Length: 391
Ligand SMILES: Cc1cc2nc3c(=O)[nH]c(=O)nc-3n(C[C@H](O)[C@H](O)[C@H](O)COP(=O)(O)OP(=O)(O)OC[C@H]3O[C@@H](n4cnc5c(N)ncnc54)[C@H](O)[C@@H]3O)c2cc1C
Image 1 (cartoon, rainbow, N blue to C red):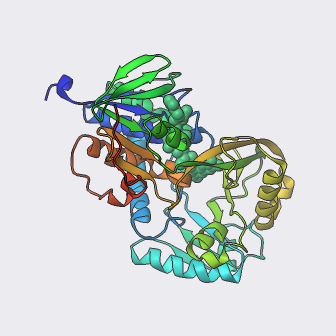
Image 2 (image 1 turned 90 degrees about the horizontal axis):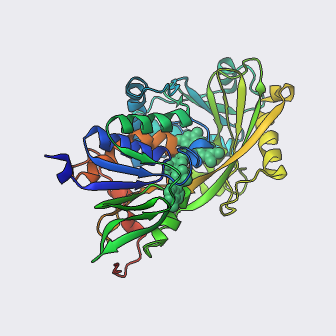
């Protein structure tokens, strides 16, 4: 088909999700324009860790999606012209209490049942893998499949590859409104002028709720702040990515929620900097670092990795995860407005899920069948029942 006959797809948001969709669309010769209000990766995708973690995903569609995404990273490392620093280094979930152990034992069994290579380790096995861990831990889970990637390079890599395949990528253009006629989107109005569109994709991350509000559609995406502490480049003390069982166990067994803290993550970059995270806070769009948040992170990470005493903090930053009430992203057409699609709400998994999200969304937008059903992620589950009319 001639390119001019294809629908023109405008994507709002130059984070990892918007750029991945743009790349996967452009690869299929689609007509695509991505519009970002600031710099690419200036949102959550530039203020996060880069864990591609399998063990934190609930068995079911979420884990299946993550496993599918993991398989694509190796190809992306070759396909994209920017080094995305993808490394399958393996990862551990650190267990600190008996309650967490019980929850993680069941969680791990369910994950194994759907084919994830993961196992439980006792404290001595865990310390064999990570000798600097506290001997007070109760155990850990381990999977060789967990990986890490550079989230900024990944986002820029998707954008550059999209441009090479003739996508337009426009930064420093804020979308001010979505234009509609007879209940069909017709374009967007931005600070750099109007753009016609047959399809508009809302990939505005934690701001996706504000973007859908522009057409009177309420989507429950909320910013959930995560603060991160960066240490100086020290000697190697970690060879895997680590997260604590607290958050997962509490998600899986709600009776643990009160007793559990917020959960932590730790990774060491190649040059020796440690990234210690992160809080989970609902404070609107506030991206400040707080003394109490930083204290909590340091207290909890040092309890698991006492050698942290020898490290100095050199920097802190915070990002806003796009949270949804059921922990799943919102992907697909919004029924009450033709041509308006959602692609947001990945909360703490957007980097890990970006390759598969981009591919599935691209196929859906081009009217092709997706090999994984996206029904569980449909905006229908949140859309108000009354029919709205636009334009
Ligand atoms: C502390 C922390 C740690 C994390 N760790 C991990 C991890 O280890 N692994 C993982 O997989 N995920 C992690 N995440 C989650 C991950 O960062 C997000 O899920 C992901 O970045 C979301 O990508 P996005 O493209 O949806 O949103 P964003 O990256 O926020 O992109 C949305 C973009 O839309 C733009 N935008 C908004 N409104 C408009 C408008 N009106 N006009 C034009 N542009 C607009 C914004 O400027 C922004 O650039 C973490 C997040 C945080 C905060």
